[in-house]
Image: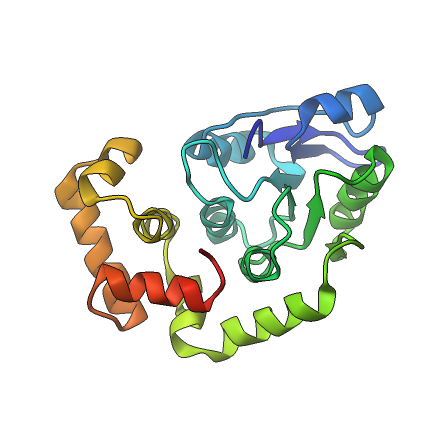
Length: 217
């Protein structure tokens, strides 16, 4: 999330945790209460500020997927209301984001008015999808994710496992992943072994094939 994780206060409600702080500050409503580009900080900020809505980008600057952050937030609080705001419009990746449990998906090229409406829609507990996105293709991809045993099991990965899965299929070595996440190579390999077990495969190459089938590459 480039500048993801800020917070806003809607006209009627407590706080909103959002991406795109400047946009909302210029608009004046909702109000940003917190913001970070670091995934581990985002989770803690949400815990402290208890926002009405969390806005996440699909990709953090360090390559961590916003989907893994969404999974962790929803693991801690299944009632968390999450809206993705991203430049990514690929149906498979949008479907993956929504299957994490997020209520909505908006795009950064929408007007300020549309983005504020997206925030308010999700704050009210309703689903939102940008009108420019291909809803039929996204629904087909969501169905495929749910019906394929291996693809469906992606949802069983913990936030850290999903981070390592995403970095592995992006071609990073265990050592490189460990450096980015400030954990040891051995810890990365332990997580990777659990990922392989959960997805029923035996190698990093098979993880790449799973990601390719899900349209995540």
